[in-house]
Length: 295
Image 1 (cartoon, rainbow, N blue to C red):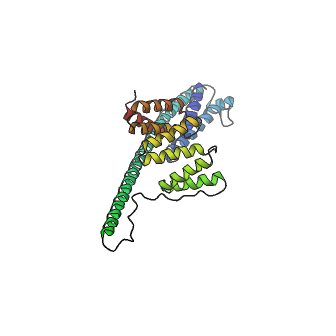
Image 2 (cartoon, rainbow, N blue to C red):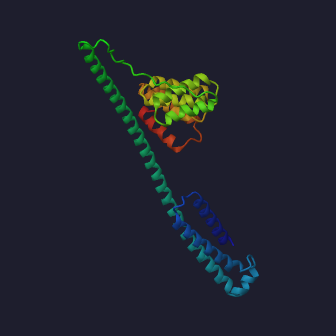
Image 3 (cartoon, one colour):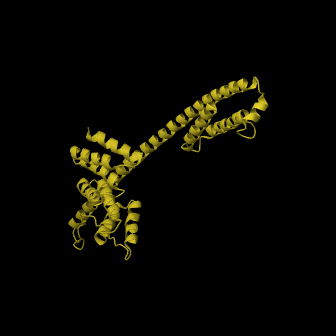
């Protein structure tokens, strides 16, 4: 009976491990199913076909030397089951390791994509500046020509996009501003979010608006304004779900401002208040801490 209890415990343990594994582990499922059938065979040998009827089991195997053989057979089956369960556990560990490796590679790809996006934004800004300079040169040349007094010099400052929030519900206004950010129209998204905050300072979405303002300033290489936006979220919304992200973003911004000590303080606050955050955010916080040489 003690050996059979051990079999039940091992089988439940394998079942619990299997509940956390991905659907691709079909081979492991087959093995566990085979183990379950063998476990039922053990039950029939030990307790009989009616389940728990020991007297019937003794009659099936005999009343003299059969119990000893039955115990030996049960011990051998338990040993076989232990070996097979150990094999299943090993395969589960291998699958878990592969899953973690895939998650790590996914994080690397996301970081690489973010770096490419930043590089693309810089190149676009450089191209805009180059086109602007070319336009100014052409305009100045035209102004120096005779009989061209009607032409005006080109404006050296690019015109800001004219953004107007839709009238009515603050939720509709926030969704409109955020839709511009999702389209990667960061200049328009920045203006729309600023207008949303000015019009709805006490709205429940104001914390999100401050976070996205900080992200836009960060991506557009304005670390001072980014730090201010992140600090407003951190200080004015202590229970906001975006607060851990803002702390890591603030730390990275402070590194860009040559303030590694303050960056480490922000990461220390992240460690104190970041219960339940994703492993991806924790990994990013670790990388930022390495850059800042936090102890």
